Length: 447
Image (cartoon, rainbow, N blue to C red):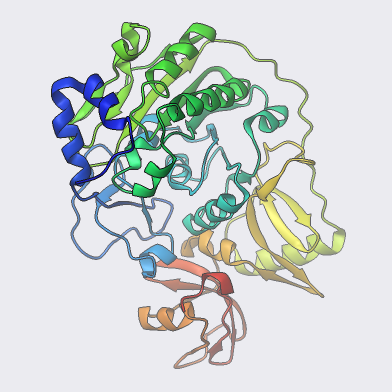
């Protein structure tokens, strides 16, 4: 049986009463694995039969192999099933401006991006520098084109994006009680006062985040903890201090209403949602959705202007015209020799800590432009003029860093091609004769 931290069992025995025994017993059951299909991919066919996660658009129960083609090509994203409900509740519409404030490792950002379908704008922020690198890797693998990834705090972001977003999602840093079963090491940090410490941090984050929300915009707040201090009590504070109204959340079998009696008794708190592991297949979660009726000052937003030299613009144009059927619509911006497409609505980001400045298009070399892996995985094969279909066996060699030898030369002869495997792009590679040179990033290659 799981050994809980001192004070945890006493606290939830008191709060849950008759439910407590089943609640504690659920921690000894195996965690359920799940994944989402990526709707941004041209071919969304998956081998095998999987049970649908009933409350999701793209979710299925099952385990994802991190070295599989499906994972490496971004066709699937592994995500705990309860966590999937956060994105489903937020459910942005196409062309929305969306902020995922505490975004690593990228599950919720990629889910939000699935709804946006490369329209509008997604800002994915992660304050931890180390975790922001994982976030960027997952965003690029998923094939996002309309995003910016930052590495800062909410207060800094509010300076650049006042009164800007239609939807904000905050999966707030929390005491992690809902993850005790999945990650028992989370119990090492738990003390009886830890939830209140985390609640104070959540309130600080919210104070800055609210400044970035448009009037009529929606805030989705979530945690992976059971603690009332971090859940109903934070929402009660939000309702008391800001002009928000709680929105109804459609609840599915096994989901519970929030508990007003665990906060200030405001019956509206019953509109929030609790996911308990003894009532459904998934870890512990809390979710609230609110509409903002307040008004924020817009401030001055300076537009970001392209900084390409005439030579850089010429090299990019030559590459794009020869290989792409679709236009890259973002602001073209170069950081030294690295070229990015930054969504048009992004303001001047000078001084803002950036983890990834939008879609990385590639690198300027002497008298030429070399496309990035990110561009080759973001483009659908139907959007590229020169593609090269490779087998799954050839892909396995390529993913290890090896050169591919073709049976015959490509029709278009030497040059850059988008590699296509199982109907989806897997980066660009250069063919010389019958050989395809390896351009798969070294940090992603399989050992």
